[in-house]
Image 1 (cartoon, rainbow, N blue to C red):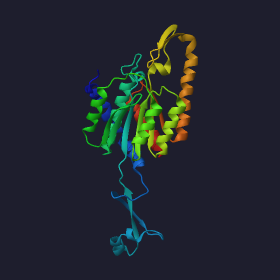
Image 2 (tube, rainbow, N blue to C red):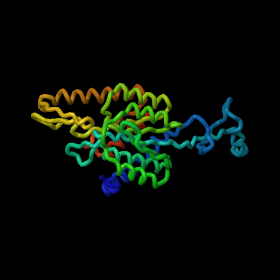
Image 3 (cartoon, rainbow, N blue to C red):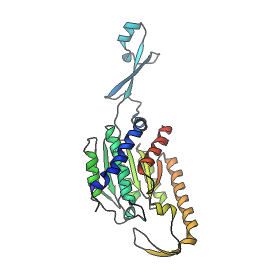
Image 4 (cartoon, helix red, strand yellow):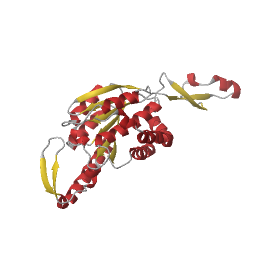
Length: 298
């Protein structure tokens, strides 16, 4: 059973800290794009002045500036609405797989989720956690307190991936659970029917949630480093099959690439950010590359 310290060990902590230092302006821009609101809420921050134009609300005129300049200027405001984030983790048995990497897919997802949770809390945005397999197993309410990262990691460190998963059913339940527009960050290897998964992602988007899909595969699932007669086991059903890995490799790699491209296309059409990852990629670099690409689209 992994301990919390595994995810807060010095090298991981350094990665998170380095990510924060290198990406502050990226994250600020990224979260600012999510915060942007066309409405003036109760909590607003003064931004700048601009000249009054017909149609502006006279209540926004800065009369102090008028007294000094004899010209009408409007105070521009910027809504300070917090975005609420949910880390949504797939706990199915397949997420516990690794071939030769130090981390399983689930452990890799935990480190990535820890970095995102840290960054959100650093921006004073509340972040919560939902864990599922065939149903929602655990949840933590969103909080922006510094202690939330420890609470998230403490829960995740007690869990072990096991059993099957039902991603569409659980995403549909999550869509019904979330009462306010939120940032949903989904971590999964997406072993299921793509059409049903995409349909459930559309439900989240229909309810105005911002969705980031982190598609996490093991390095061996992406590169297929097997040769000769090899026995494979379905990680969720336990079914075993022997295949000629050498002859099967090209067909397998083509199928994986097609699967990822299909998800990319469907997510693009749904307005979902699709982030393909494998466990050989340093999670801090992968996150920075994603945030940079995301910032350019805001």
